[in-house]
Amino acid sequence: MQYRGSCHCGKVAYDVEGDIKDVVSCNCSICARRGSLLWFTSRDRFELLRGEGELTNYTFNKHNIQHKFCKHCGVQSFAFGTDPKGNEMAAINVRCLENFEFENLPVKHFNGKAL
Image (cartoon, rainbow, N blue to C red; front, side, top):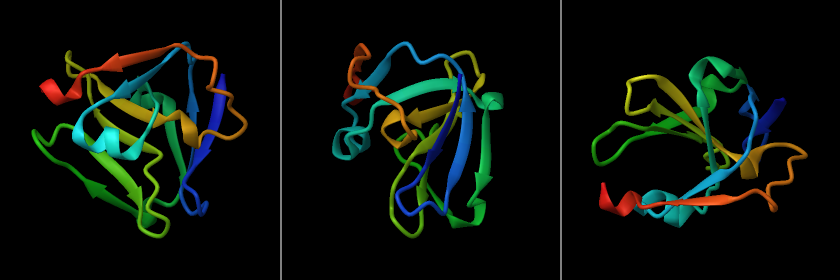
């Protein structure tokens, strides 16, 4: 499936491809405050359509994840990082996907506080 996502103001938009079977709710300090529901896919399935210059980057702790925020509306609709095997990944906040109903998907809880 092909999905379109964006920040709130629309200055940042992207397409992402894949099959969303479940989402992750992480309890780390940033995810818990942000309330994201995340889906992970390989980085090569993500295409930024507009807004590269409108993004700001935030990293913390081990600096393994690049949290990308729109400079204007403050929404983080995606992040980049690597999986445990070193593969480049995109973490998509499914709440930012257009016309996507995530309410009935299984939610996996991840203990990010323990990292």
